[in-house]
Image (tube, rainbow, N blue to C red; front, top):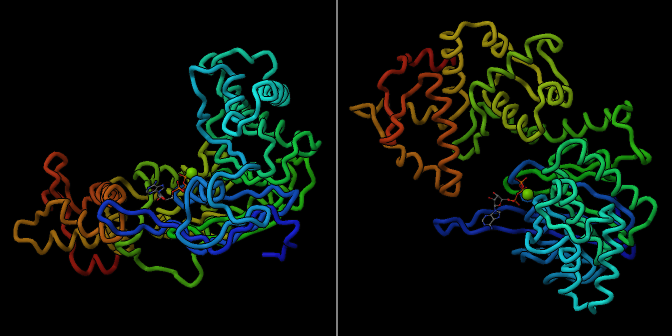
Length: 442
Ligand SMILES: Nc1ncnc2c1ncn2[C@@H]1O[C@H](COP(=O)(O)OP(=O)(O)OP(=O)(O)O)[C@@H](O)[C@H]1O
Ligand SMILES: [Mg+2]
């Protein structure tokens, strides 16, 4: 990270660490060693996959949650609770339905003991600023999603925050509404019509980050820590179609999909959070990759766009293809492997066989389930047995989710069967595998 002169640093995080208690009493480490600084005049975007701890980090910064270790300095002073000078806009608008727009906005000032008259004056000014003029006495339910989020912004801006935090502030809005609101915000910022001196925005949306931010920081998962950072040296307003813009989007995709260096895994361990990826979506993605215009290799942003997927929908699928060695995800591209191509070319039965081979070879949990069932005299085992093993690594809910993914993949591949109501795994119908075939992986 470049050295930032202290007097120009609005916010500095040093070695932030945070864990939550799991239901069993164990700790789930969410953030570890997070270092981050925001300079005055800077818009910083924080990108990361779902669950990487972005919202947790924002809550720590704003003093709503306490970190386990590390320091948050805001304008050089430690943060130990809610701070004047910071305001946050949330994804869900968090408006009070029984209050009017004006009252919702005024609420931002009430906690700060601003006198009634001044409250009203400033609330009206914020409402005006964000384009809600004429809606002062409307109730949230009378407003569209975009207008409601404007109220969310007005409530944050009314306190004249020095640092504005945004947690997925645009992601609940439709595409056009989100774009209009982004443009309005960036105009207020560039024209200095708000006193805000720094913005930290959390997003899933790579294009949004490249559109708004001066610098992008990528948070890796498990535990969350900064894994990459880049500046966006494009002047505002930015053109999504410009080749320099597209190139930066590509680079961010590449950073977000890259494997940790040097850990090219043959099989992902039991402790791996299998991504939520339904088999028929995987098959659909493989077919799309194989077909025109990609012919086996696709640029990820383009693929997401063409398939109408958000990043959050696409990443789990890509990760699954990568784990299963049906595609290589590298450098912002997805490229089918030879077996990915064979899968696409095969008929339904052969596809299942190929999938089964890859599942055994690349997903330890699937191989483990199959082995346990093979060794049991009745070839049956209760799912609880596997859940308990997974709970060594995950929370109860997460263990259940991961097992469900393995079960869905295993059932499709006919590697094992699952009796839904009884919660029993068995080898009732699945195809027999010889040890040789398992080794060969197909
Ligand atoms: N109050 C809590 N108690 C226990 N675990 C929590 C709590 N809040 C968050 N977590 C866990 O911490 C991890 C990070 O959550 P967080 O909401 O910060 O992620 P995120 O990056 O904001 O995800 P998303 O992109 O889905 O919003 C997740 O595994 C989540 O389950
Ligand atoms: Mg979040």
